[in-house]
Length: 464
Ligand SMILES: Nc1ncnc2c1ncn2[C@@H]1O[C@H](COP(=O)(O)OP(=O)(O)OP(=O)(O)O)[C@@H](O)[C@H]1O
Ligand SMILES: [Mg+2]
Image (cartoon, rainbow, N blue to C red):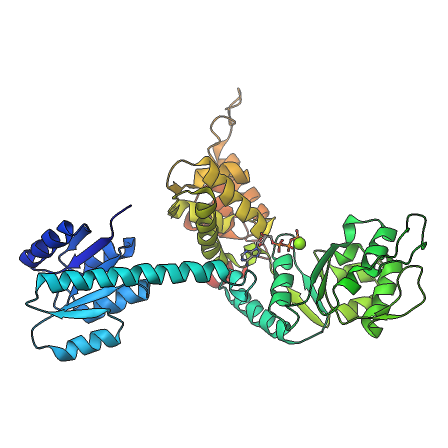
């Protein structure tokens, strides 16, 4: 077993030395710091208990205590206070110190307090682990991202979950989190104890989809030897998630509309009206407005479904969510693969923030998973990702100078133009495609007299 680590923050070397001697003899590991800055840096790496002097050369102990508690409120801190400074001790306890010891202290007493403190550390960690393992897997907090768009979506999801039965329409590109949002709505709604039934409309042939949804009576068709309940019946009191609703054929669309309006339906081949209490959540990555215009999707059903519409924006439009998502997935895969990846290099983060992610969060997640499986280093680099996502990387092997030579200037101009076009005029993304920074791209735009495309992104507009 690894012995617990105690950090001693005190500027007097004699005090550090005597505490260290004693605690090492008691079987602990001891790290030392002689300033607040040094102490905070070591504490951030994770220690089991901190012995913190009240008077330090570069800061007072109370502010250091506060900083430690901000990083990890569960850290156990024992304050070393001056003789007679009761006020400080009380203030320290108020700010979350575990206990205090007045100088000069008795080493036996100190050791007993350290042992008690470490016991508390252990308990706090156990409680935390237990809570994490029991926590609701689909709470709103499992949606990562604090960009303004995501904050708004989380707020809406809570409201939608609270509203008992209204139909919801989730739209957004593939991988933007529609499935996740549907589960969050169900599991945070008063229906959470009921069933969550999920069906992908494009995956089944028309008749099969119909009998899956509405059920069938015995003898309704050749294979119907038994009566069968459909998802709507099985989900009574719960939620039915109709994924890829845009693929549903018109005949079924009509039947679904009737159900949404009357709350009753008939099984295939049946005559009795069956009444159920089900919330329907539909999702699509198609543009239903267009499908309606093309006559492929019923307009009345469209309006009936979008009582509560929720659009999940593509990841490239909320790049602020990328760093927390990267952190989240690195932590998750560290647990899953028993790895110790610490993070990504600044270059890699820039790459991830500017990659267009056509597959959105699913693609980002997969990229991190593969990078972590393939990399042996504890920090993921831009190269780890560019190989996986198929972009960037050194091109020296593919680029051979043609026998007749080239006009380097023209080639450069053409490449910059292509990058800008591919990035829809977004200079930051174009820069990433060329392995340059934004200023270097802007310099080339001016050098070659390239006209800025009409629809440059909002961020570029703001910056210019
Ligand atoms: N904001 C988020 N925070 C954390 N994980 C997310 C977030 N959004 C999506 N994910 C994860 O990304 C993956 C893809 O999401 P999901 O399956 O919900 O997408 P989708 O919109 O239903 O895609 P499709 O249209 O292809 O079905 C899942 O693993 C999901 O858990
Ligand atoms: Mg989905």
